[in-house]
Length: 210
Image (cartoon, rainbow, N blue to C red; front, side, top):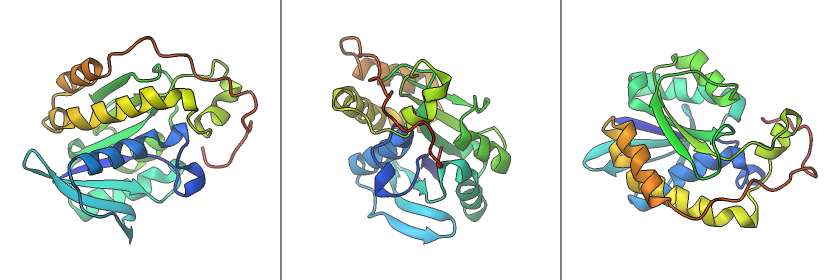
């Protein structure tokens, strides 16, 4: 069995945030491959659904811990199903990639991402990371407001296309071919140059769940 984890904060108020693009991506995968109706578990703490992708059994997890404690849910799930880190795929937002850009790799650092930092502390670093670009606001002081703000209307076109491309290409990644996955997403996602992220100067400068 393989575990796909979409990072984000729980609750409707966060559902459209840039920080929740990982959760959006696994929702699209579940829809595309006809996974089971999502159900909530208290341990591992999250929303789960199951299905098959190219004959491989896959469980999807959206942690109900907040982003900063993502590792608790992922660690519990790994132990519950007796998985190895290499069988876990974490989909998350990435500030250092332009919108619509996607990269995947096995292992690596957390690059300041609080969700990955938490996961590293619970299961180590030898898991797959799928980095979903949301762009950088250009000022470190605006990062929290940027990721905790909903995607704009202008973002919706590239966002929908990117999520659909990730779902289409995910069988390649589950076979361990990160390069083929990335290439396939890039091919499907070809479009005119994406606009820069909208100015988030009016976004809240500080929020709790980052």
